[in-house]
Length: 159
Image (cartoon, rainbow, N blue to C red; front, side, top):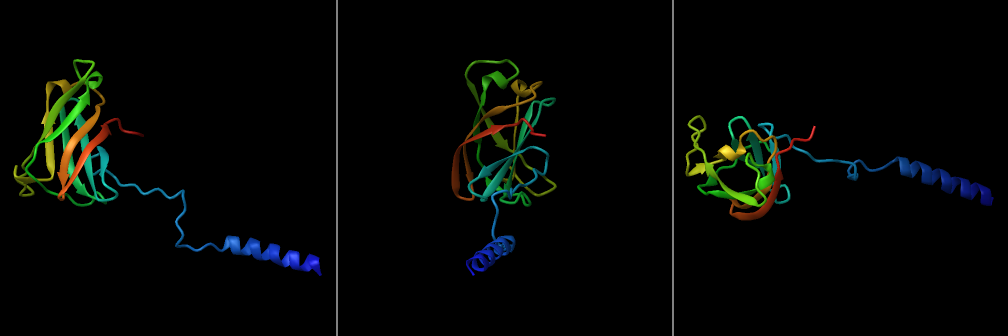
């Protein structure tokens, strides 16, 4: 009789383990978004918003776009200069310290965005030419009335 009870408990344990609820999240699930322009995405808060950075070493430019938390819609920011620093060893003329730059608002006549209200910012500088990777920090950006500070970035794309 004890053998039958143990066997029933064992079978019950096996079948109940195989019948997991589908609404239970597993640790292996990864939530990702694609950068619309092929750059790198920087999170602004917990799924609150995203900033895409795209470096073009041929032009010496760094473009930034502000997106919603799913990277599907552009989010306009009120005119601001976005200060950033880049590690000097990643610049055209390598230096030991970080170097300060500013991303400036970029108007887009196709979308009706102006320098006062835009989702796109840019920096063009000789120091950004000819280098394959930029590594640094966005010092401060105001996104939907929230301040985000010291956001690290690395434009090296992971394959």
